[in-house]
Length: 381
Image: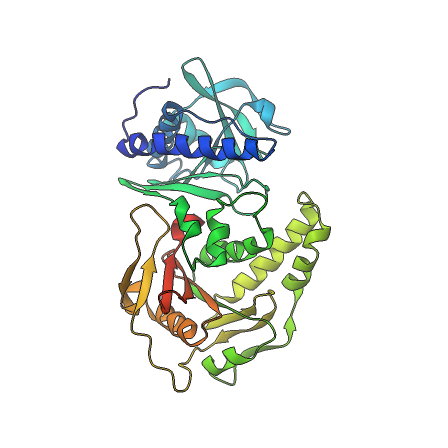
């Protein structure tokens, strides 16, 4: 039954989430978008979060549930798996059914009748801007939605970690000198302004974070050799000629329909292949056209350059205002070497994954004349 939750964070975030989905869906309608989801009310959002949170703290045969809940009627799903009898949306039910629906891309469909929420079955397809709640680990929930173009990682709206709530700041996408990869990860730009190819770096970031070994990905301008002055030579795992599988697939982007699953699968495998190389000690180096130059590279300070002594730290969440601090506070050795690389190679960006799940993008701020570090793990969950 839809009622008051016992999880305080659910009450804090519910109205903000309703406002977000209402604004996004209304904007999509005005742009002629189709296959749009229904806006969930704050009461419904609160009830779904409450049930999922308490379920996340339970265990079934020693395992915590990892599930995805999507708010939609079965009529909006393609080939839904329908239960003969609706299941009550409760922590006990979610815990029991969790092991069977924890694979990526499977959602438990949630809808309502009167004042009662129920689980009607499962689906692998959902409409644009559909409210989705992911249970990632005990006490960690992520509110997200499908991108308007339907391709790539879902857009995160809020992250709930126990009593801590992080609301993704929509205006972060419009800050000066915001790296292109951050625009894509936030996903708030209009369909007409959306550049799907930028999403490749987001997918690389997600895959880098997933292997949990930490790593650095340096993205340098194609057709230049300047970046070599910041790398120790010889580079043990240099690639010659540059490996172009991912670049070749991206050249086909305009020829492929967004629902071409074969192309998407090939692209996903190529991305995972490249992201896997970042687990090797050292940095992986690619061009901004996604050509691989090498991996396991050691970053060194450019001859004649001074050590980076300060940078701008930001996080694209409400309350994550920019602050200037020492590079060592952004992370460990990986973060410091990545900051130095961007300081010396100002037309490059560096993506850095930590073993603990933190993820940071380093880029050069021409406005502030220093390195900026954008921590984006809240966008990648």
